[in-house]
Length: 150
Image (tube, rainbow, N blue to C red; front, side):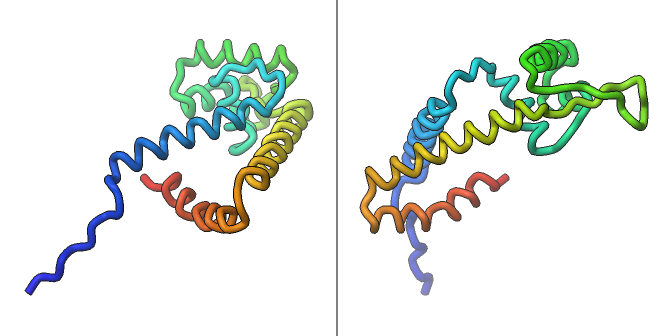
């Protein structure tokens, strides 16, 4: 005799849609906490990639970001003009330039993250009960697994 298969507790498609909307709203609120950022999404993405992966050439960045080299040249130019990245000769091939974050960019990342964490801490403490905070804490591993799934 076949045992009945467990059913998901909710319609997963509806859950996925609601989760996407709620996470988008939360991300928007977090972005609002970074004062005065005039960077485009492409520029922010390049800065985050340089922070995460380290120094890279414009060609490598274009490939990683999925943009044409000409488009990356414009992004790099704007970031250099803003004092957020700088270039130095590639030690392996002096014809290439290796781009890296400046101290100013690192400081902006640090202060922006502090502002976001501060806002989120106050929002959690102000809007949630201790039981809800415990429940939220238990979901972070689940959300991490979702974020890392193929």
